[in-house]
Image (cartoon, rainbow, N blue to C red; front, side, top):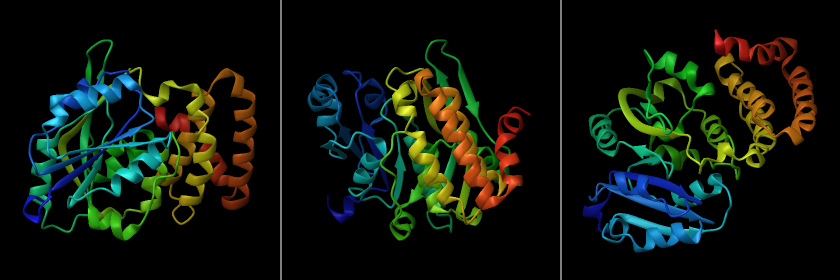
Amino acid sequence: MRDTDKPILSVVVPVGKLFGDTSALENWIPYNLKTQVILVLDQTDEKTHDSISQSKTFKNCKNVEIYPVSFGNPGETRNFGFSKTKGDWVTFSDSDDLPNIEVILTSIVANNHESAKVLIGNYEVYQRDTGIIKKVESDDLAALLKSLPSGLGLWRFVFRKKFLDDKRVLFPGLSMAEDQVYFLRLNIQQNEIKYEKKTFYRYFQGSPFQLTNDKARIQDLQKSIPETLAAIKKDSSTEIFDFFSAQLFSLILNGSKKHFVGNLRFLVKALIQVFHVYGIKKVALVMSYPIRRCS
C-alpha cells in the first residue's frame, strides 16, 4: 500500500467458526482505502474459509487482508491482527456484528487534531429472536466510565495507533474477559478519552457463534480473574474494582453445573486474596456488586 493510500482506520476482526455465515461481514466491509480491514481466521471451519475466499465482497476489496492462524482464542488473534495495522486509528470488531464505519470515520476526522487518545461511542443491542433494538447510551463521560464493568464493549472503542504502540500492551491469550484485562492494562486516563455521543456499533445478541454461549469457554474466567486483579492493583477505585467483581459473579452464575462447586471454591480463594491485599472493605464491595448493579 502506497503512503498516499495509507488508511485512516484499521479494523481488526477475529473470525472463528461461523459455519459459512459471513453475511454480517459482507454488510459493512467498506469499498474505500480509508479503512484497512484485517480478517484473522482463527481455526475457522471449512465453510467459513470457503465463503470468505470465494466471496466477491472480499476478493474485490483491496483494503481487506486475510490471515489464517491457529491460536484458538480471540486474545492472541487480536494481537496478531494489531501487528498488521497501518492506519492512524485502530478498532477491534467481532465477525458477527455491525460496526458503523462511516460514523467512526467522521468522528476520527473531527478529533484527529485534538488531544484525545481514545474515542468511545454508543452502541445498540439487536436481539436476534425478537428483532428488538436497545440503544446503550450514557449522559456523560463520568456515567459512561461507571457503566463499563457491566458492559465494556471494547468494539465501540477507537484508539490512536501511536497510543497503543507506546503502551505496548497485549491481550491475554484467553476467550473470556480478555478485552477487560486489555482495557485495564492500558490504564487509560480520563483526560485521554473523548466520549462521542454517536452510535459506533451494533451488537447482535443471541448469535449461535458467540463464545458466551460456550459453558466450557466461560471457565476461562478462572484465568482472567487473577489477570484482572493484578491489573487493578494501582487503581482500586470502586469502578475499576467492579471489573473483578463482575467477572467473579459471571463465573458463578454462567458457568456449567459440573463446575459449580469448583467455581465456588475459586470464589472463596479469590475473596481471601482480596482480604489479604485490600482488607475487609473490598471484600464487602465485591459481595455487594450484584445488588449495586441492580439498584
